Length: 115
Image 1 (tube, rainbow, N blue to C red):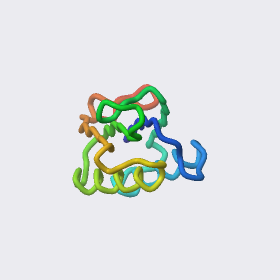
Image 2: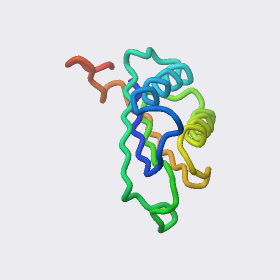
Image 3: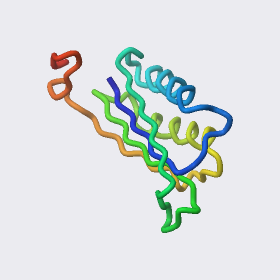
Image 4: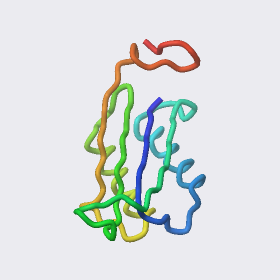
């Protein structure tokens, strides 16, 4: 596990949603040193999102939850750059990422807690 949910009102540059989520899954697994089989990435695009009080501004809101982080700052920088490169017309100032470190005792996979 990590779980990454990405919300955006922007179009992807030349990729489809499946390609985006698969590439992002691999990036997250590698950066967090987690097995890719436990990574879940969800992309939700919503045209009604407003960044800086305007829906004309394109942006990203992402929630990354994981059992432990190596270096949150590095992860946030990597994800921000990835989002800026993958979405059309998204400025860095409109990329927002929330991280949450979870306890293994609070995460269940396959009906069993991990800790």
